[in-house]
View 1 (cartoon, rainbow, N blue to C red):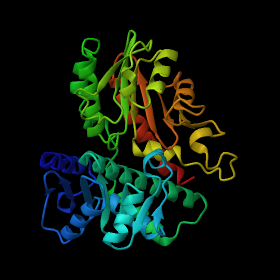
View 2: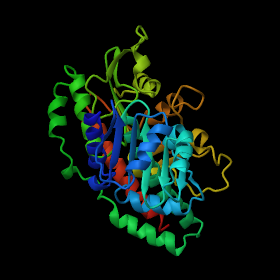
View 3: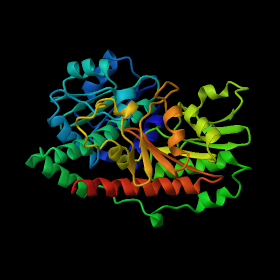
View 4: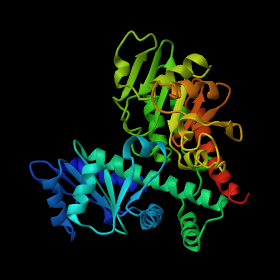
Amino acid sequence: MERLIKKYVNKLIKSGLVNAEDVFFAGIDEQIVWNRTETEHHEIFTTLFRHLTINSLLFSLPDEPYRTIINYLASKSYGAIYPKDCETRTFLHDLPVLNELDECKVVEALKRRKAVIIENKGIITYGTVSPEQAFVTYSSVCFSCFVKFFVDYYNNVKQKTVDQEQQAVFEKVIELLSPPLEDGTISLSELYRKQLTLTEDPYGCMVETGNLMVENRLVDSFFGNLSYCSGKTLYISQTGSSLDELNGCIDPCPMDDSSSIALTASSEFSAHRKIVTSTDYNVILHGHPKFSVIISMCCDNYVCESLGKCHIRCSRKRYLDDIPIVPGEVGTGVYGLCNTLPVNIKNNRGAIVYGHGLFSVGINDFVTPFRTMVFIENRAREAFFLSLKE
């Protein structure tokens, strides 16, 4: 447990989500293991372990710009924050907010939801099986709040309802943003080298690509997936796998369903399979770059007949330049990505799924879709700020 706690503390720091001095992470082995003991809240969190069926607990102030964003959203929340991105709809539902660190209120909130935000103090979340669950939820809360903050600002600009406080916070946040990704800052040397043996070593190529996706923050927590089709086999990352830990987590799925191995494949396996069988592409990357998700949710048609159902049946053809923005949900239903995504990506280098993420495609190499993803994310960021001036 001590090793796992250290691992996920380091992941939180490396992801730019927290500062080392702010993280408090604990887990139960034979006894409670702490990453640090010098905290005024030690007794409270010991109590939480007694009242909740959990094996790990994470509490930390987020790093910037998440700290400013979450503090602002919490101050306007009236008890809960309601993001509308795919991760929130699927996993979080809403984000309860407390104005004080009261153990009874925290227990009540965590019995209903995966995380609770304490105003100006941080995010508390937990794992029931592994500390990884706490890391995933913490990351998802930061992602969802980031997206909500920018989408809310866009809507308020278009409706001319931005007040002085929101404007001041927005200006502070954009000063805190990391710079856009540039080709010169991305090391593709290993990826280029491994493409030469893609057919001989699909696993090695996919592991290296997954590492680059995480290093460049094109995915958050364990969300995102990738695949490569060779002959009658679709190699795809497993459901719930972390893209920077793909060793042993790639499934070789027969395209003819002659094996049940696809049961552990990515939840978006059906969409990947439909793309490779209905287009010329055999390489797919799926990430959650933030501004691609944000721009997909920025629409100023406030009297649309599909309002509130944009994520499954948008009534308009929308694009970022030549990149389609499409609705769709995970699964194989009428509005499943396997039905909405392939037809839109067929003659394009990628597609953005509303409130969800970005898919980019290629043929026989991962370099092209990786660079496409970086390009589209940078273009989405640029388009967002330009749209505020229109």
